[in-house]
Structures are given as structure tokens and as C-alpha cells.
Length: 263
Image 1 (cartoon, rainbow, N blue to C red):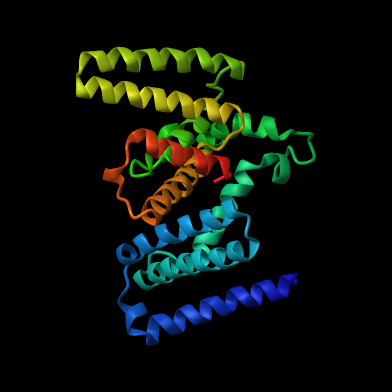
Image 2: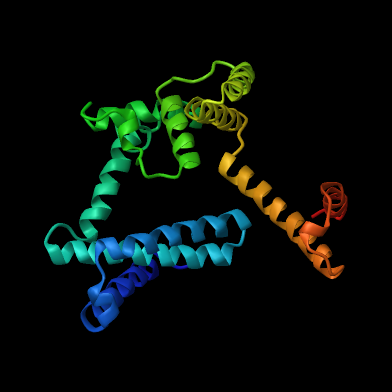
């Protein structure tokens, strides 16, 4: 591992490279906050994929790519005279110091469990903001729906709004399931959509309570579906057939083969 001085030197090198690129590379020079934003979103997902895969070398690389984007935004902010990288770093440092009084404040040294910190996290953040913002206001509306649901539930938990016992959530899941079934009989598209949303939200909540990341769980199942469906395609093509040539029962038989192979 590198020394603190080496880490600082590496960060300084990145800043120097950004200055050079912004001043001398036509492509980098013409980029804006808006043009880089979409690329940043891709980098975030690539980092997420690397973490999920457990590939530490890939994770290292993706952290660097994302850090490059952060420096890019800061450089553009500097050019506008709005802020620079030091402002961004100091802002997050001040925030972390304020939100961790058990480490940096008068409560330093006090025995505090991770659960106690998590249970009061949103209340500490609300105090920091002086009550000018609601808890949910910090969640972007454009956030992917599954991630948004998780974030909302975590913020509610941080304010003490959560199930007393995790087992109690199943009654809610069953209730929402029944409401979906009832709504489907009405053939009202808006009502059906609303009830499906309630059911999905309650299932996500259950996963959270049981320590399961619903995003990772759904991604795992999606990848499993991809493997099995690809096997079905390959077997169909190998026999010189098309899907339209197979009955559902025949497809199910090949699907079961894929399951038996551990795909």
C-alpha cells in the first residue's frame, strides 16, 4: 500500500493531468456538465458491477474512472468561478465531521453501536440542514425506481419509522398481494399499476428488513434468467429449429435441463 505522501502525490498528478487535458485536448475542452453527466452515470454502474462481481482489480479501476469524473466537474466549476475541488472536499469533510459527533465532537469516545448511529442518522442530517428540508427531499426524483424505494425506506428507518419486528412485514406483503389480485379483476389499468407498485414497494421493504439488497437480488435473478434463456436459444438453434417450432411444454423441458445443469 502507498504512503500518505504517495496518495497525495497521485491525487495531485490527476489534477495536473486534468488541467492539461482541459487546456490542450479539443474533446475535453468542449465538454460541459451536461455532456459528462450521462458518462458519469455509466461509470457509477460499472463500479457497481465490479463491486458485485467481487473483482477488486476492476473495482480499483472503476474508482479511478469515477474519481476522474469528479475532478472533471470540479475543474469546470473552477472555470466558472463557482467552486473548485478544494471546496467540494472541504464541504464533504465538514458534513462528515458534523454527522459523526461520536468521533469528532463532544461525544467522542462515547460507546456507540452501529445500529444506534444508523437509527438516528436521518435525524442528525435534519439537524444539520436546520429543518429547511424534508427528509425525502434529498432523494432525486430521477433516481431509478428500485433504488429510490430503497433510499426512501432507509431514510424513514433513520427517523425511527420502521417495523418493530421484521416478521410483521409479511402481513403487509400479503395484504398488498391480495389488493393486486382484486385490482386485476377491475381491469382498471391505473388501479392495477398502483397496486403493483404497492406490492413491489412492500417486497423491497421485506428484503431490506432481512438484510437482502433487493437490487443485487433482482440482478442475480435476471442474470440467471439470461443464462437459462440463452441455453434455450442455443439448444433450439442446434436442432435447426425456431422458437415458433416448439410448444411451451418443449421449451419448459429445455429450461429444466438448464436448471439441472446449474445455469
